[in-house]
Structure formats: C-alpha cells, structure tokens
Image 1 (cartoon, rainbow, N blue to C red):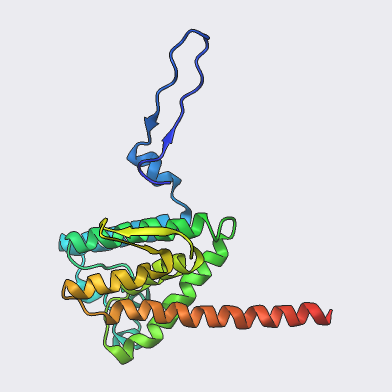
Image 2 (image 1 turned 180 degrees about the vertical axis):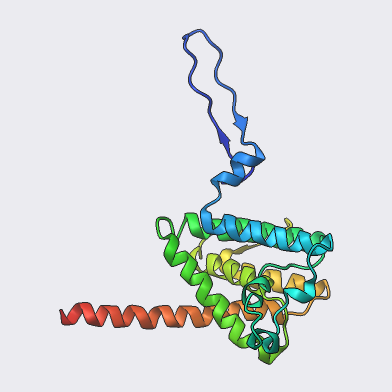
Length: 220
C-alpha cells in the first residue's frame, strides 16, 4: 500500500465498453488509508517539525529535558518524539521510514490489534525515555523510528531487499545497513543503536509476559 496503490472504477455497463483504466489514489485518499496510529504519529511529526522550521514553535520548548519535566513541563515527554530536525533530505528519509515501516507493522503483524501496536510503541518510547538522561539525547523520534524498522525486519526475516541496487540482503539486516550508511554520512550511531536496544528490551518483556500468561492458562 502507499501513494502508488491503485483502484478500479465501477465496471462498464456495456459489454462493448473499453476495459476500465487504473486510477492512482489522490494524496488525500492515500492519507486516509493510512492506519490510525501511523497516521497520527506521521501527522504530529510533520506539524511539529514544520512548525519549528517556520518559527511558529521553538525547538527549545519541545526537546527532552529531565529538569524541566520535573518542573511540570510534561509535554516534553511526548514532543521530543515528534521533532526530526531541519526540513532537509534527512527529514524526508525519516518520514518515509516512519510512514512505510510503521504502516507495514500496523497493517501486517498487528492487523486488527491497534491497541497492541500502540502499547508496543508506548513501551518502546518509555524505554528510550528512561535511557535518554544517561546518553544526553534531546530528541528521540529518530530512535523510535529506527526501532520500528528493526521490528519489521525481525518479523520478516525472509524478505529480500536491495540497497541502492548495490547489494542484496534479507530484512533483518536492514537496520544494520541503515546504521552503516548513517555513519558514512557523518551521523552518530548512538541514536540508531538506542532504537535497536529499546526493541531488544521490548522483546524480552513480551516473552516474559507471554510465559506468565501461558503458566496461568496451564493452571486453570
């Protein structure tokens, strides 16, 4: 699914009519087809980032700061996940990864389980928030996006992918390929590694909870 998805118009009334033409979805139709959690996160991220770029919002009012949070500025717990820096190519890449892999997870592995998908993101965001004060990172949206890429790759281990047509690899290696590419561009690998670490903790917690539920079911 995505902007390139097509749909068919109603069938012709006459048997002699020409075959129906494929019509691409409009941007509005594509946006409305995005599942609710992905749509909300994507919309808020674009609004906050564009608002900061247009000086309607100050980045200093949305970044993660433990001292200010304890002083009552609780919105920073959320807004630091919604700011992705300047409106440049890096921002476009992150919005692509967010809209693609977050959507693929919500429509695929978590189809019909919107609440489970939301709580997975919430738990991952909580872990990142707990780690952030120790690594001095003010904006965690990139880490959360990278976490979703990592989750998608782990759940689709046999999907074949290609990086810029240079070499092929399977989906579980996608986070590592993107990490190496990010380092080659001069970015710090710490932000991406945080996302992978958060998902690792998330998976351990999921397995622990499942084992508890299985034990309870066995005792009944």
